Amino acid sequence: MGPRNSTSLAAKTVADSITTMTEYVLPTHANLLGTVFGGQILAWVDLCAAICAQRHTGHLAVTAGIDDLSFEKAIGVGQVVCLQARVTAAFSTSVEVLVSVEGEEATTRARWPCVTAFLTFVAVDAKGAPVSVPPLETSTDEERALAAAARVRREERLARRRKAP
Image (tube, rainbow, N blue to C red):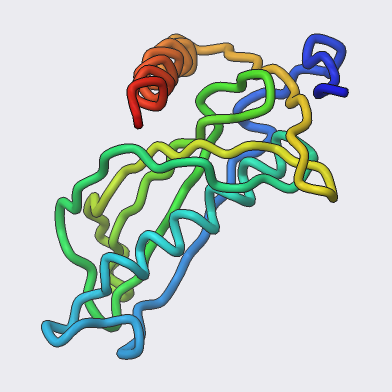
């Protein structure tokens, strides 16, 4: 038996699942240059996005993929990592989540961009089987543009998967 029909689920807005996290960079998070490991940033990105996806879907959500990302500016020991995740699109059993990461100077609160990433999550039941997700209600031009771009990225991911050996 396949997933429930997502059209029977009540739509949720982008605001319904926005998730923010704040982390303090400690020496255990840092490399020899005193800046946070890229892998640590990715772990926080994945965690923030997973919470956002679960808030939207109402189910456990597992990471299916992370699109291209590049680090713009480092964040050092004693500085703060600010993450914000939001759903950009909902498909039948998956959602795309955008996570924006900024560094913040702890004393002045000055911020700078660190990295942005698009992640795809699949909603699953307790046995790990995919389940339908609520549709995403977009209300602004920015939300509609992100949803349209998400559909393009999804088609590109599916095309790459079809070509894989």
